[in-house]
Length: 448
Image 1 (cartoon, rainbow, N blue to C red):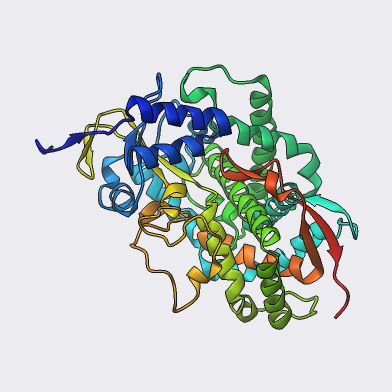
Image 2 (image 1 turned 135 degrees about the vertical axis):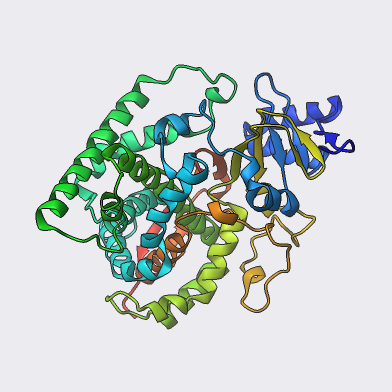
């Protein structure tokens, strides 16, 4: 390590007091991180008792952590609840083990194997919106979670989740709470809630049951795995025990549905806050999809260019995965700063997406910054809603096709009016989600 390497910057007493005041005022770690960025700079260390992570903001650090020096960092941190929950899931293992699982799981989630799911995305959207009464008020955070669960389970695992939705709803929410930032950050050995243990048990019982049933069916029928079915591809891989398959399924179930839930809910929030943008999206959907009840073609989904811009801008302002975590297994130099062995390393996607050094009016909602051929010019690794490098989000292609298809169907069928938009704020949970929810008045559109 170079003699010129510097220690990580920390807040001076006056700046630290401002950060604490902001944290107390908003009760938000996002506020604290933003104030640290403002007063200390794009690289800083938090100096709370028993919690001293190094935090990095900006394209240079993102590139180093995610690509050029990625092998120097460890993803796995044994004290984190996400590791205890997912065990050997692809998200929480390193090196060759991660690459092995990723090699199995990538093909069913590649775009060519996602596009055949468009009819299912359309059908599951209908299953949710058919329950909406004309003129009713719906919490889109709740409704989009229902939709994301039905879609993920139905298309990725080829399992109908509707019969289990009510029974497993609370266990799923409990597991999301279990891995969200909490007391464990400053007290790694903090005892968990009894409800978390019960939730893990309920989800394990369910996942092991679908693994056993599918394995028996494939063996009895001598079936080759469907290339679009992740569960069957895992079962067909030698050496993948039921325990290892459970870990990958639970990883996809929790991470996969929760990110889509957040993206769809935030999109409705932003469209509700900007009626002129909603009108432009509606006009595009009407022009491309029209009044058809049958699912759109791949070409039609690809023609929803403005909706794609809206989704990209939503991901910029409210990236579901708002922060990345690594661990320094030995002393590491990042952007000229010394990161001591054992330090938690965090790169803030949220702050990179709102960095005034790289974005014009970064706090403003402006889908035009992603207009094809006229995109706002920012350095690589400034915009990374799906991460970057070899460990980028495995479900990126899936999420983008899913969101376009589902939103097109909902906007084709209904008008949406946002209620109490000024009360909605971002909450740092397992994902960045709108709290207390996104209440909208739903009105069925007249037949055109």
